[in-house]
Amino acid sequence: MRRKLERSTTTGKPLQVKLGLDPTAPDIHLGHTVVLHKLRQFQELGHHVILVIGDFTGMIGDPTGKSETRKPLTRDDILANAQTYAAQIYKGTGPRDGNGAVQQ
Image 1: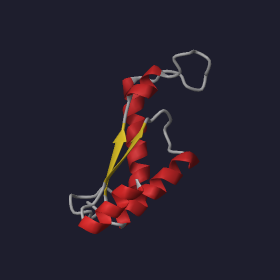
Image 2: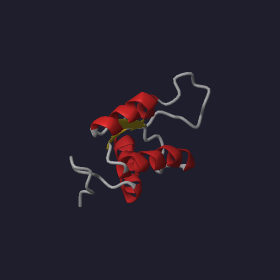
Image 3: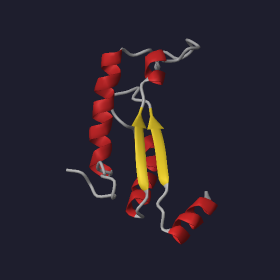
C-alpha cells in the first residue's frame, strides 16, 4: 500500500479505493465509522472512492445456524437497508463525480 501511495503521489494519478458493505441492519454502526472516515480522507486527498453496498451476505444470514442475530433477510429488506446506508454514508462522504467533486 505504501508503494501505491508513493507512486500515486509521484505520478499524480489518484488511487481507486474500494469498500464493500453488506446492509444486514437498517443503520450503519460504530464499526463502520473507522473505514468510512478513512475513505473520506482518501477523497480529500483526491483519490477515487468506490463504495459497494452488497446484498448476498444479508440474504444468507448465518449459514451455520449458530447466530440468531444474523437471520436471512428478504430482498426488500436488503434494498431498504441499502437505502438507509447510502443516506447515512453520503452525509459524511457525499457522492462524487469523476473529478472528485460532490454530486448534488
